[in-house]
Image (cartoon, rainbow, N blue to C red; front, side, top):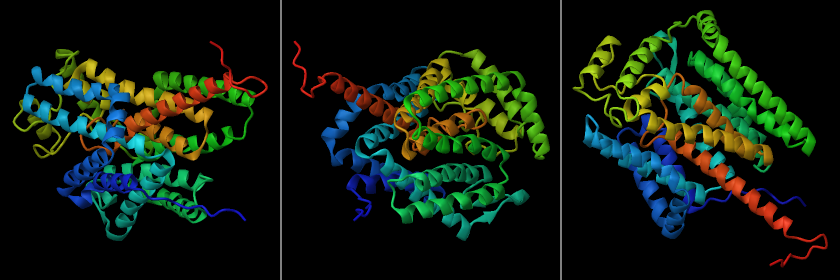
Length: 415
């Protein structure tokens, strides 16, 4: 008889679920979201203190980013903000580090499917339409709803493709993936649709790799590398013109609703203090003249959480090129290492983490999703880097152990 597949739920899974639910569904939780996250994250850390400490000591380099953010308080325009938000970012990233030591990638995938699925069901049942006819779901804006759906379709497709997942859950994932398309269209976000398509392609590509021999994998890797290089060159040469045509064809503003003007202003602030920036979380502050002018210019209420709609520009304004370099190392380092690990160990969970990291990088050019306190995208960005490192280290260790075995199967006792 074929053994029945079961899903085991541990204390760590429950606590991570609570933390993720608070962040992903913060529009539903309201002011309790941050408190719920801190409570669940704190309990996760202390439920196995020794393991938590070991994880933090092992992956300490990830905390260089919040440490630098706190350091910017020394020259920040608003030092209290920089220190307070830097501490909160450190707490958030410590949670990400501890989580990777307690949950497998497959468990995390299933957990995210449930959490994001709740948001989708709530949006279908209680959602609303915003100005212009775009569907908002239970979120505050069409962009927030579109971002939620973009992640959900990737998670749902991964669950549906995972051979180790029970059949009933795979069928639920397939239904969720099929339903995501119309909901993304209802959000009227051309950017989300364009960006999720290449990320979704990572999953079938991973499944294909799993069926190839060693030399076939190597050939495919070379072809992918050449394709990515050609695509990057094409984007550099003709990306602006192509984007303008796509936006014009979809009825969108070629300036990305004023984003290009914001980018020009952001670059001027970076030029003033390029290395250290103005201080972490010290630009979009009520009472700060330049921020108030931009809020008024774009008809946004003062203190409404506006940004430069570009991760590199927005974050470089506050933490300079030094801090931005640390962020880029996490984002792109995580993507590259996870791509290598997925190529070596192709499965649905690894493909999901790679696709989510790719989505984060693509969105980084028009949105600002990382790195902030109590941010699910910041947590996943760090988690992807650590999961990839863990996997590659394990592969290297297994290879070293195999090399120590003689052809007869006895362990080598070479001095």
